[in-house]
Length: 465
Image 1 (spheres, rainbow, N blue to C red):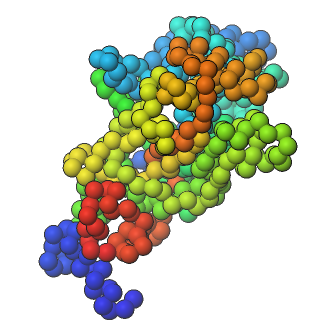
Image 2: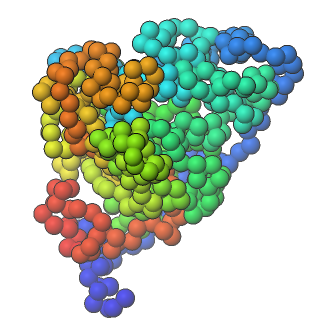
């Protein structure tokens, strides 16, 4: 590096900290709560399941004989209720979550229960009348199967042919494979929804993720359950009505994790993930765009990463540089039935926070951009029924599909349809790269740096880059 350029970079970093001379390097602090790599011994259940099990409910009842509180604990969590946040509308607090929201991937669970609930931690959810009070319908194996043979299908029921007794013999603490079955495949396929969660993490290299690779963590080493409540969700709104426990890097790495005080200064306003996840989808691609308006053309050649008649066109990306925004841990959210705020580019969710918000930090995001159906008269996003009888995938009739979906969701439908561009933020917090690959100063503080300083509330790069 040329001497003049180097001097300018040093001056820029010092200006961020308000220092006029080099800062002494402090000793590196030790983690306050290190997570130790550990074995997970588990009781061998094979002696308890020597006879065939006829139904999944029979299996759950057998689990509850020794674990009588387990189902009740699960039934209080979002894995069961599919309600994971709350929002204020017209003076009322509404519980919200996957059960009653829309997105710009598969759009809505409404009317599509049997297909979507393959990832529900329960059995038999096929319509709006599902009984959430039946403990025998809690699915223990979706998290605790250790055989690798258990899989779920429509309505969350085990697929035909699954040997329930063999799966029960194998129960253990949840491993990556259990969590990844749903969380790596959200939105209809691997890498569709999340850019930082996919099958590459099942056997992660040190370079891909230092926690899952080098340290050989399981998901539950960070997402440690308490009475089956698993902390960590951050892409929702929360108030007093919702139980929530956030995860923070500082719980293991302290609030000042660096030996260099200038770097620790950045931690006050910049999320750890911003510097330590320079890119996401580093091995497998993730879906970046989904245009439903192109669906239904049987003449086009189909390709799972480009076009499907039932879903429209897609664009995927690999090794994607995140987009950045202030984030205080809460999200604004479009609720089903809300009037659109924009017919040009409607946000489905939006991270809250700003430069003036002391609780906000600059976070990395995947922003998924979609084009989905809406009512141009009532200015509402519409939840189409896609699967099953009368769904779009059987008739390829958008009007019929959204008429049925709107009725099920209890929102008006004028009979007119059009398509609107939407976008949705997904925080990036996995795929932590080795320290040597963390962003250098010039990644942000340079003429072509990755941060859009004006959108973040600055007149220009605060370091003069």
